[in-house]
Image (cartoon, rainbow over all chains, first blue to last red):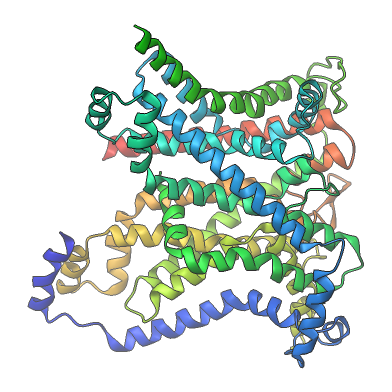
Length: 299
Length: 299
């Protein structure tokens, strides 16, 4: 509508962009952008230099590419950093947490929307209210509690995949249910009634009719939770431990950083490796990540 | 009748996983947490003695905590200003007629993809090596030493890193709001002879009120809860004097809570601090909700 309305005005006024101002803006933006990207350049350049080079002159360009290879093999084979196993653990934890958060939250949100009872309103209110609770106020008792429950059930919840994934479900679902709830309210009931009349079971109605309609809001939930879980430091630190067998990428980076006297060339190489997976993903899924972040904020 | 029972059962089973996780991860630890803050809890599951408000009385005499509280407020206020000003300027630039604006939009968001631990380390390198090196070659005494180990400039480094990381995200929200303004309104103003700055201040900014509210509160809670950049960049240091006692100059609340429990082994006082932290955040949320409500009434 806006475009249609704009067209005649453009013609009427002989609308044309101001050339001089645009070029000035382009220069300002470019300078600002280079400043913003500088830290990444610093990481890349210093991953290609030796520690002595860096200490002698921190602001210099790398002089040989072979040093990059040396740093990369050093950090790759470093048992404290152990990038491959950290990457594997981060991928396992992020993907499984996202899967159960999105499935269970959408199921719960659907039931809460479609049942107009006092109970469903109360449960939904609890989820919304719980969004205020900061991690800090539950983190210490959570550890004691997870330890007791794990001992009781015989399934360890600390230092285990199942424990941290379960914790992510608990911390991620309130916001996810809230987002799904808002979306499902707008899904017409007629579709579900038709499926009901055709003899589709309640579960079948959800998985075959409702779930496919939720695709756009799945993007929001996956992006918001995904970026958070992938980069989270405090929950893995507490639940998995700083020196446990399972270590996510942020734990590995911080563990390596604290293990030795500062070896900046290797630290820079380790941060480069830690940044790569998410930046590569962003190159391919940029549209979805940006859309998810914007939709999630305006929810 | 049986189909109705089956239906109810399915819906109950749909809710169950979310409810169990919610109870186990949020509700029980939250209640335990409130309870522990009134006891001499040692961080184990063992029965603890009630101490009334002793923990709360102790933390309000704790110079480290009070300093941390003030520093967190200062950090939050500074951050709200810098993040939103930078984000707004960038959003104006990348919605103008410049070439490559989509690339810039995507690029400015990149710092937000990467976790605080990794970014904190990168910027620690910049502030301890790159900046002093440039500073001394330019003959600037304040920049020749690390800005992180100086108690008067350490807050500046924290705000810089957080602004760099967060501005790209807030920019996306502003860009979405600017794009939501009908083009014809802006062009009509231009035809009427409104200059660029008039159009920004008289049309864009008033029409973006909602985006400003969202961004304000997002930055507020994000800054107030800041933890991982704090750990990786400064880890709380250096030492400063407050109420005639040595305190950590850049130790924000989240880090202070963690350190109270694990560095100084005082779980009960750490928990009491976390409860205060929760109460402050709840007050912020109540202000936000009532602010939004009053906006709705006006509209």
